[in-house]
Length: 312
Image (cartoon, rainbow, N blue to C red; front, side, top):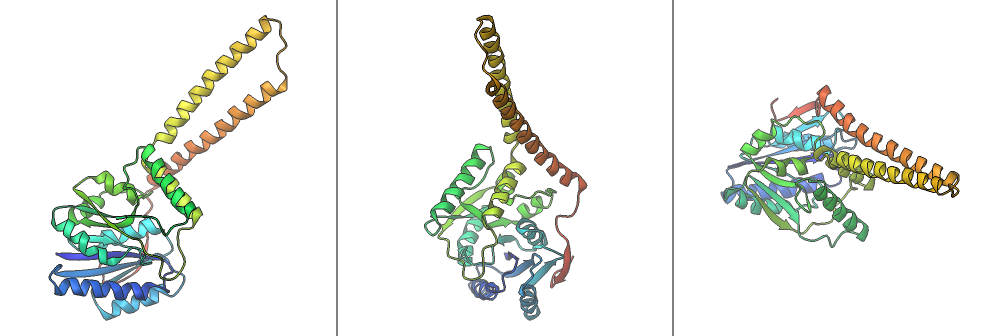
């Protein structure tokens, strides 16, 4: 079998050489031991503004097995993964981040699952002991919300996975602009397996997913894979409508009884409450319409500026 390893890179000059050495050592060892017959490593430079691309060019100049795609600008982590997967030529394709928090050595275990007949192998964190309380809590909340929204997602799995050639081919048929790969691959079906590991600390550099980006990523996943928020808007709207009918009945009753109707509070509070909900749900509907707008324009998911050791 030929193995393809896809690594998105964005401003990772502090760690990319260490990552490359570990990957070369691993893939060369697996080749010697006949675990694999051949391999390629595909780096996708996602518009890095540091010296990452120059380092990657140096890697590709030393070996035709090292291939580089360079984007014209920063398109994001998910498009970078998609570009690498779509350009991979291996029988099995592994996606791996450059920061070494997910150990490359787990690939051997993933290959065993692949050879036993699984088309998708997910690497799943065993524990989150290294995370802060806030990060553990928000991560748990994210997965719980996704599951409540009806999204099929693998708990505590990021984007470290192995997929077979036929999964790659089926993935090429998916033409979504709003990509959420953690939901797309479980949606595709096929035989799937899990392998567990302990996540390491980032070896160097800074995280590319601060709280703001993580929140945006979670919202992207929910709105790309679930219409439950729209259904919730309908349910809440119906509930408020029913409550307003009760309020009207109460107002008529107090009028008939000759009791004084409460003043402006009973008028202003419902007005602001219902008005605020209207604005909230108009924004929610606008979010979905915006996604539809991006989909129907059919703009490219990414633009490749340069290629090294890889054909179009």
